[in-house]
Length: 293
Image (tube, rainbow, N blue to C red; front, side):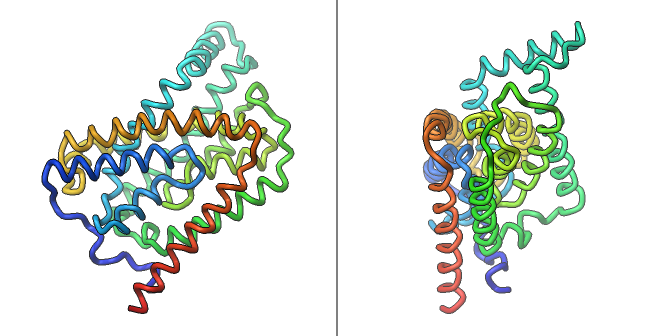
């Protein structure tokens, strides 16, 4: 059980402005690289600073830095989002709910409900979630390995025949339930939604696009709710360092989105399966050394 204990030295001390900016820059780059790849940004935003000796930045800080990723995905998919909004507007006026854009809007709305309800439940009933065993390094390692195996299974059995125009409202609910699991560090919002979509016979690029679009409301809400707490947190360092992290996350997220969509056109997700297995095993080995020391 020692592997799943929260290490006592995790909370980060107050920082000077330049050190806070540097750390926020690193966290922003980590966030941008990992938010849209199926490898868990929350896990990396916990593991990387702990391994660097900085301590755990906390849920609020990581949620706000994710706003940079939201800015990137909004900019990258602005045409898709505009079409979804037009489709929903047409459906409201003329009842054309069978239009693919309208169905996508309904799917995104339905898919956002599970993670919002789960997030509210955590806020109300798990006030010490920052220090919960679910956010421990051991838990992150095990969850990463389990999710790697599930992604491998989805990659193995998925039929990969559905496109975005085939989306139905029930797809939003199914993938949205998987998205809610991402509140546990190590699950990966992108990874869980991509896995669920692959199980449901989506083609890889379409599954990734739907995952990105579905994540917009959830990540935006999480970031906005945590703004005040993050700016006042010692690990956040104040407004300027947090803005540095957000900008870094936005730039790197844009590059990561573009790369992943191109990559999935001709490649499978096995490279992420292998990475997640190595990531989880590596953390367990590191913890084993610490426990034995």
